[in-house]
Image 1 (cartoon, rainbow, N blue to C red):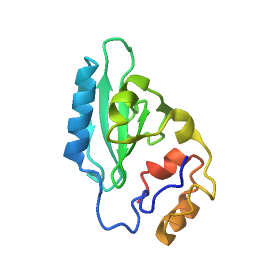
Image 2 (cartoon, rainbow, N blue to C red; image 1 turned 60 degrees about the horizontal axis):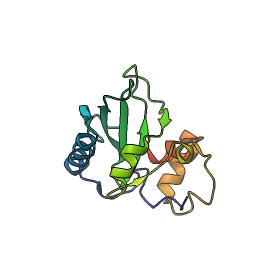
Image 3 (cartoon, helix red, strand yellow; image 1 turned 90 degrees about the horizontal axis):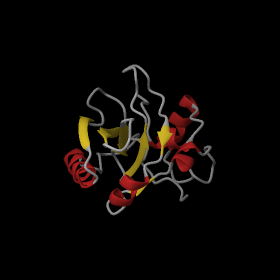
Image 4 (tube, rainbow, N blue to C red; image 1 turned 120 degrees about the horizontal axis):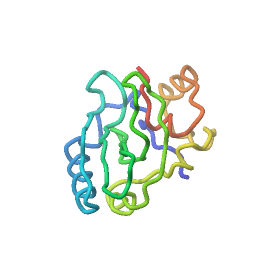
Length: 152
């Protein structure tokens, strides 16, 4: 995995780099190709946090729903289980190879193993001082929690 880009946490960044409408349109196209359905969408920062867009989708051949999350500042996505409780902020990363193949043309797709990887100084070397300050405060254990966070 490459070092994370400056601004990925959303701190000390001028604006979002990933358009919500483009993210949703791309998700709808990919999900439609797989005969799936988009059920709900969430725009980053609509309730102050989190720093990522989201779409919950389902497919006829999978019993569980999948949440596609996209960093609002850099085109990085991952897949996770949708929360069962709106107050639950823990991300349970998972893989969805079919969607990953379709979305990797426009986004960097983070595998569950990459998202679950520990935070190392090499991976966060490009983050700005404000981002590093937030990391010291929130103490994320996984790199996925740095890229996709509810920090305020």
